[in-house]
Structure formats: C-alpha cells, structure tokens
Image (cartoon, rainbow, N blue to C red):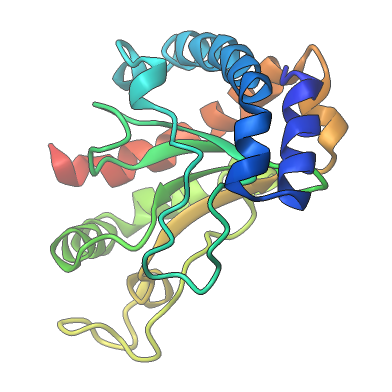
Length: 220
C-alpha cells in the first residue's frame, strides 16, 4: 500500500508549490521518499515474478525526480504533485513499453502502460507489427480481462491513414494511433491506501503484460 503521509504531503505541496515551502518541508519529503522506496522495491519484486524483463531493476532507475522541467511550460510551478514509477526492461531511460503507476491524491491515481509519443521510426515498426499480426493483437486487446481493466486503448490519432496503409485496412484505427496506451483509472484514493493494494496493482499489471510483450517485440 501507499503510506497516507505521501498523499498528505502531496496535497499540501499542491497548495504551496514554492521552493521556500519545499525547503521548509524537505525532511517530510525525504521521509515520503523512504516510504515510497519500500513500495517500489516490493512491486519490482512482485511484477518480476511474472515478467522477467523487470528483474534487476532498482528504485533509482524506475522513479522520477520531483522537480519539474519548466523551461518550455507556461506553468512555472517548480515541483510535481505526484509520485510515479515506471517499470520497463533496462529502466526508465530505455525505449521499451512500460508499466507506469501514478500516485496523486484526490482521484488522480492510475496504472497505465504502453508507448507514449514514440519516435517516427518506432511508430513505423509498431504499425507494421500490428498490420502483420492483427489477429494476435486483437486477441490481446479484446481479452475480457484486459477490457475489464483498460477498456479501449488510448492515444492521439491521425485523421487520415498513415503513409503506406489503405483506409480499408482492418487495423486502420490502430494504425492511425500516435500513442498506444492501456489506461486503468484507480477509482478511489482509499484503494491505494489499503493493505491489499499490492495484489490489486499486480493483477492490473499482469493483465497488461501480453499487450506490452506484443509492443516490445519490435525492440528484439
């Protein structure tokens, strides 16, 4: 489960998103980090039981800095108001499709995975994989367990068919996609605060694994 003090800290940070407040509360932040590390270490261990690609990951190569990159943003708030962890082969700096767990209070928690805004060459490869193996892809995303957790895949789409594909291609709606994301909304903050949340999170990730495996074939 996620320690409630993390949500308490993030709630206060969202209302006091300044360097001065953060510096005054740095010890609280460090305590939250220590607590989150326990969770991350455990979920790495649990997910690696059914996905060998996750074995060997560490807290350091799965979590993100709380500092925001504000160089190209109108929002100059210096800190993120969430904790996130990305689980993928080789760590967060690789291009592999990942499991991503996002913790943000007030109904903003979710578990997602896939490829977000990949480069054109990677997007071309995944389109080719879907086109060549659309029957297998359909079986994965139409599996009742997958649908129960994620519904339809999310991602921005092209208006027209991508170059090299006809509009009557049976996979066209997926070939138009510029990102392929499986997205599971966690319905209530209390879900992540319960002792059985680790089991819940692993069930969601396990349902996502065939989708990630399909996508990650392009990197082999």
